[in-house]
Every structure is written in structure tokens, then in C-alpha cells.
Image 1 (cartoon, rainbow, N blue to C red):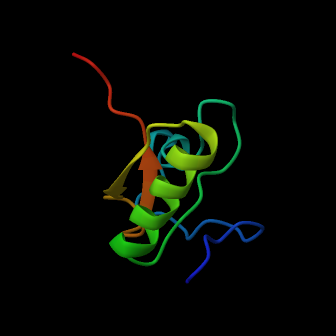
Image 2 (image 1 turned 60 degrees about the horizontal axis):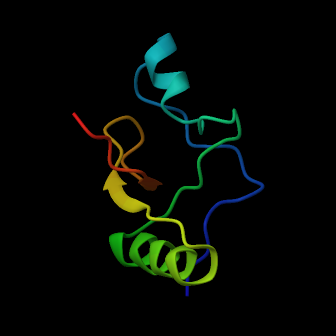
Image 3 (image 1 turned 135 degrees about the vertical axis):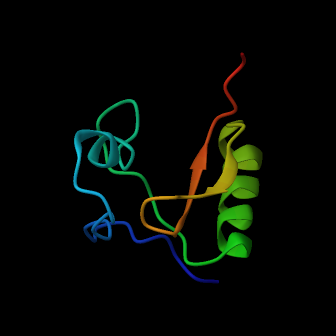
Length: 75
């Protein structure tokens, strides 16, 4: 199983504005974990759901093209 890029710097976003930098950090300020494939992100989301009770969903990042986990926001 491929691992998240923990401990490594996130890939440089395509756009270097404030929005792109903020998009690569969690709400607590820590960098988001990146996954190379949707399968890797789905496995991580399932593990977190089973072990921690966290309801996270994989999404493809428009900035770096990697996969991240995020919560679904209500409208």
C-alpha cells in the first residue's frame, strides 16, 4: 500500500497565490496529506473511518493534481 507523503513537503502548487497555499493546509494549520492515487486516498479514508471515526472523503486537488482527504461541507 502506498503511503501518504507525510514528512515531505507538498508539491509546489501551479498557482502561487494565497488561495493555493491555503489549500494545502488543514484547518489546524498542518499540511494536508497527499496521495498519488484515488485508491490510496480511499484506503486511508476507510482506515480513518474505522479506527478514528472520522468521515473524510477523497478529492483530486486542482492545484497539485494529487489526492487529499476532506470533509463534506454543508451548504
